[in-house]
Amino acid sequence: MKKQFSLKRNEEISRIVHNQKFVSNKIFCIYFDPNNELFSRVCISVSKKLGIAVKRNRIKRQVREMIQKIFNFDIRMDYVVVVRQKYLEYTFQENLKHLETCYLKIR
Image (cartoon, rainbow, N blue to C red; front, side, top):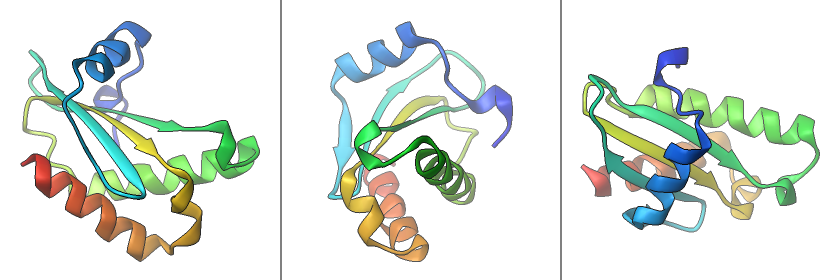
């Protein structure tokens, strides 16, 4: 995922989450909102409850790879992907399918 596709500013993330448009399942919760950019932007949120920093960074790398495979960045949307505790109980392929089903509900 390119750096321009990442969503970093706290004000923008708060705006998207407080807008309360979201789709969720037992592993992921995706908040979304249209934007004025020419491309989509994504933020990945992993709670400290999921483990130490090394483990959380590994989860973020995996989710970033999943997003790159699934998401269409030509659509003008902002996404905040929240990873839940159940993520650790499944394999990469199963998590990929769960994220894909969540994303397809949005589209």
